[in-house]
Amino acid sequence: MGEIRNAIATPRHDVPVGVLEGQVTGLSGLSVSLSGLADFTGVGDRIAIFGLDGRETDAEIVAFKGDTAIAMPYGSLEGVGSGCRATFDLFDPEQRKRRAGGTLIVNDAWQGRVIDPMGRPMDGKGPLPPDGVPQKMHAHPPDAGRRARLGPRIDLGIRVLNLFTTCREGQRLGLFAGSGVGKSTLMGMLARNTACDVAVIALVGERGREVREFVEDDLGPEGLARSVVVVATSDTSPLMRREAAYSAMAAAEYFRDQGKSVLLLMDSVTRFCQALREIGLSSGEPPATRGYPPSVFAELPRLLERAGPGPVGPDGKAGQITAIFSVLVEGDDHNEPVTDAVRGILDGHVVMERRIAESGRYPAVNVLRSLSRTVPGCNSPDENMLVQEARGDLSTWDEMQDMVRLGAYRAGSDPKVDEAIRVVPAIEDVMKQSKGERATLAESFEALRSALAPSGAR
Image (cartoon, rainbow, N blue to C red):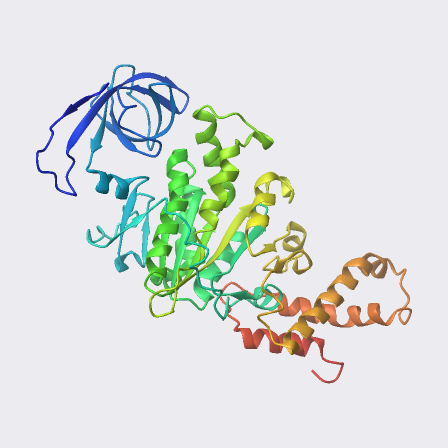
């Protein structure tokens, strides 16, 4: 059993009642084996490990094997060896319950800032105020029976999304894309253009050199002013990459609980799952589907279900988290495990395709493969008719374009094909949008109506 020292007779809620000491008994890959902590700790508890050079490294207990605790570090394990000291702060039961899984002190000053998953500033703008509301990083989703319903339509500011994946406040969409098709640029446009009160952006496993490019170029000063950006780059530990997703969700829940309309953008769920895979395999879980242990697919809904409508308050109102989770489609395979699991949890999906990006049309959204599960209920009958007509024309063109380009189709053979040939170029023009352009819902539907109008009526 570990040694307990520094016991306090009259504990305060914010001061440890004692410190439990254990020691390192082994290291393997990304995990550390510890003795002396098993009787007082549980999975998710955070400990400190002191290296041979005296450097302190924070770690989290991820598993137990008999009386041995298995922990993973938030930083580097350099200088840590067998026999090194590990400590765990003991708190009274109520405070321990609040601290389980980690908490963040969130306040309004987080808007306009770039922070790491532990709530520490990364933008050189000075420290954040220490006061605020403690938010559990690993909170449970709101109770299903007490959650509000989805809110009214939300203007995403991007024509192709407003038209073909119309979204409501509190809805959760997946953004499925391979690398290099304009996903980060689209997310920056969403952060700037969406009609919301606050945007919370999680960059999980992002390339270090791209963080400033995203913040300064894609997001811009206007987008950053109303955003909270949580960053864990690809060189950080799996725990830090995992916590980036949870920290962003906790920040979004803080603003949601104020009754605000929050836009949560997460890039990407795939890297979050890869971090979970590293944690699971290092703790001894067996690999299953494509190397992902079963815990990954149990953890996904616990995170994704936290987004959406908040619980109904005493005044009958509720805040909303409208969430867009990007999924980096490995090898452009839309049936790989993470893509398939996320698509089944969310309320719709937007598919971006390399072929469309290569043709020069941005955003490179394939509208025939994209859908919103709240349509047609959130649009008017006239708007639904416009969208259905446009989808029909795009589908016809998709089937016949090769024949038309080869000269194998004779004009007048099929009125539907003739109509598609006439209107599809105009529809493509409507779907194009430059990085700095914003389009409202009303403007989007008016542009589509004009594109579908008979010749001479435009």
